[in-house]
Length: 145
Image (cartoon, rainbow, N blue to C red; front, side):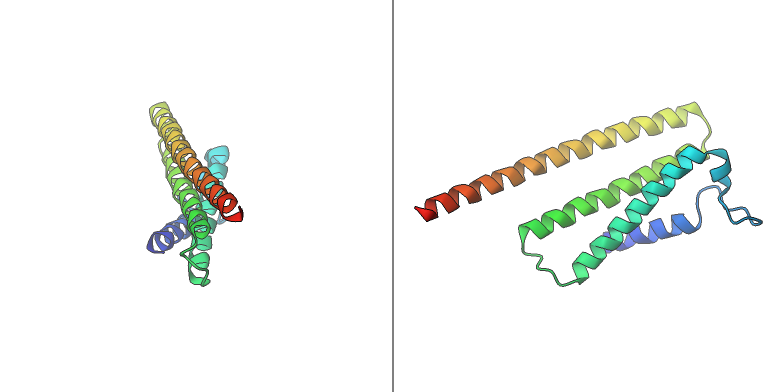
């Protein structure tokens, strides 16, 4: 709950005060004019992080049973989404603020490494979940005999 609250706070602040600041006359982000495509990615990642962290908070305070493995697994996946979205928000903001090819290539490399790590984690947990379902199916078949 603490991590989700921190992510929501950071995402909210980044949404109100985007990197590069806001034009006083129009209220629009300065970087929207100079790096429009990257800024749209920034907004998408930031919004995803904010919404997923708020969802975690709502799931935790809703009173659903935390002892259920399915519920814990859902919380874990949503937390991964929130953390990943915030990491990508950071990378896109760094890419917008440093207008050099080296920073962009480093950000892209970190992006790829992060995707590979998340893919490995997702695969490991999917295998664990599959084993759990197979064990339950086997136990249910034995009990029905």
